[in-house]
Amino acid sequence: MSERVRDMHLPFTARLLERTELTEDTALFRIAPEEAALPQLSRFVPGQFVQISVPGAGEVPISPADLPGGDGTLELCVRRVGHVTELLHQQLPGAPLGIRGPFGNGFPLKEMAGHPVLLLAGGLGIAPLRSLLMHLLRHRDRFGEITLMYGARQPRVMLFREELAALAARGEMRLYLTVDFAPETNGIQSCAVGLLPDLLKGFRFDAAATYAAVCGPPPLYRCLIADLEQAGVASGRIMLSLERRMRCGVGRCCHCGIGQKLCCVDGPVFRAGELKAIPEAL
Amino acid sequence: MEKSFLEATRLNGFLEKLRLFGALHGPTVTDAGVTTFAPVTDPAQLLTDYRRTQIPPKKYLLPFREQLLSYRDGRYAEPAEAPPAIVLFALHPCDLAGIAYLDRVFLGDNTDPGYAARRARLTLVGISCEPDDFCFCSAPDAAANCDAFLATTKNGYLFSALTARGEEIAAAAADLLSASDVSQPAAALQSGTGVAPQDPELRFSDNPLWQKFADTCVSCGACSVCCPTCYCFDVREYPALDGGGVRIREWDNCLFATHGEVAGANFRPTRLDRLRYRFLHKYCGFTPLQGITSCVGCGRCKAVCPVGIDLRELFCAAGGEMSS
Image 1: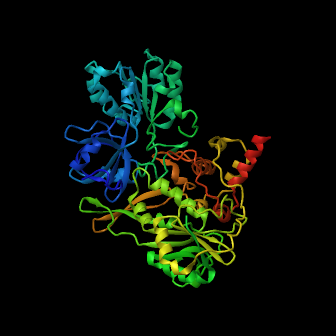
Image 2: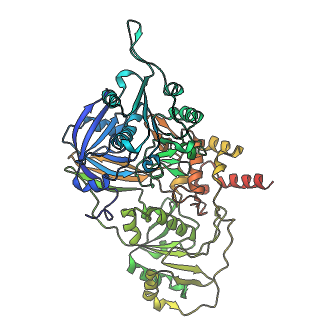
Image 3: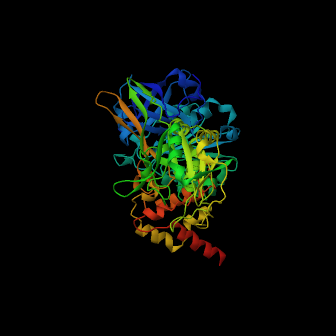
């Protein structure tokens, strides 16, 4: 089948293989797209998104949490927040799903090669950044120092904690975790408490050469951009992955306007520098 | 470009020839008194001298609600039926310009299959118009983006064919067309200054008109519904009791509060935000049509706004500020 003549609205079929509950409202879904979808999906660049269909519910844009596996399977980390994600969470392994994409620009991996990379994730923002992290680690020799700073509300909603700890233990990346709140045991806090900007303040790094990749809730961007710039990271090297409700993925439905740009085709990864002139972006 | 004269008395015969190219649709008045593009069964229903229809011709290319996909047994499928052939008669230049803009949006990269199929089966016949107080296009007489155009003269119309299909119409109607006409097309009434792209920065100007508009706007969305170039859409999916379902696409509206929603937030929570968003898209353009205004000066938004908002007031005021 030629890809060119395929109706861009028509999702490829995918099957839900496995789901792993990560927290009470977030799960990791491993899906197997049909073979015809693989040439397209193999072009996935971390930071891009796919449109996942749940039959009977509709479509949602999701940024995969990992690169496509060798067998073409895809991992999606999804929180139950709306109509479609609610139904996705009700699906059992074997259920048919749909997939279109990938869409958007993704992180500029070629440009980032040779540079230290600092990943800053807040909450569910770890999901899109995990695919970037996996890419960086799989091509470890192409990049400088890799650091992940990840903040969650509290320890029990921290995603991929064991996995990240294991990766850090291999010595290929530096890992800093923080939470907004932590339960106390006998008056002793179980871990470090603080916000991501607090972590960044005490961090010594080669700011001039560093690329920062940020993903999290909107308020996070505002304070982190200022802090990163103050630390010496150029605004053209601060990459922000933004969220909008993309319906079509190809720049038509106009729900994802960011200034005169469209999140689905010009983004979802934007440079802090280009967003400065767009006050409504963050 | 070949031009021929069509006497006004021969118009009905000409309409019959147009029916060879598809079902004839044109401006008519409904029982409720609304001017609308509708099927023309009796030529007496047809309005050749009208100001504007309430809903623009975009409804032929982007139906208010259309089925994108159906779902059954684990697979999505595209709708199978082909759209009908339609001849849209007596389109004003502003509406033709509107269709030209939609063509750029939907026929570019990633051509929209539904739009393209309907567009291919649509024959466009334009007619010159007489502007009224609401109009502000710059060229009510200009033939653009149609298969054939009728320029109104004293006793009839000067016919011109602009595409191969237009030539076919000319051939089919050859008996009705005179070789020439002594009278020239009626001089086009200049309706206004035309529509120029605006400075995107204008959306954040502290001009008090913004707040005035935001205070009076009721978010009814009529301006977008009636705009010949507003095309933004929502996609919804409905399950059926038998296990199947449909995915539909329907007109959305950037004046509605839900338009800028994401999980847990809304990027355009206030009416001011939404008016600015509409302004930015309409007059400054989004990727990849940045810098291109999609306003064609048809005057519908001003005519239908229940609270009389006219964004051009803002441009005039801003222009005054800049020049002073």
